[in-house]
Length: 130
Image 1: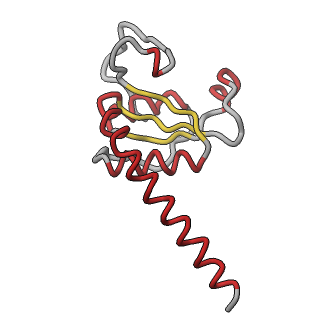
Image 2: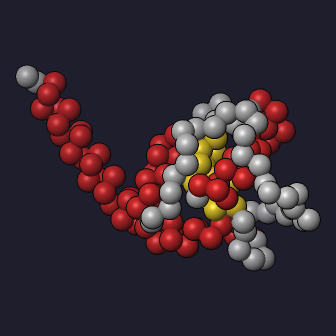
Image 3: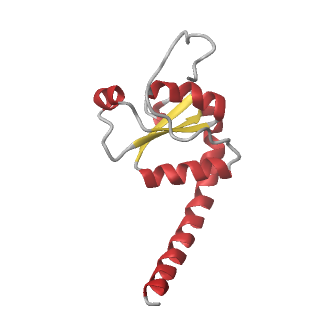
């Protein structure tokens, strides 16, 4: 189980836009489609994507992101109760140092997925008439 090398002296939780400095990690509560796009974007930005989606406990996703760059967490029941994470949501956790590179790669991934979605829709229509 991923752990921090030493206990943190201070932990600050805030919305990313309200952060007063660069965070060590950023936690995104997202639907599966957004998780797909965020992980693809991290990969495009050269951020290593960690192991497959983590289960319980959710808190291990924070040190795992520090070690790997980007990880997904399905969220454990305690976290879901305390935070109100919905059944159709999961977490993607990114290392704070990688946020700018991921943000820069987002437009490219968005365009690529829009083109792939259009292709797949056309292809599905073609295959359904065969």
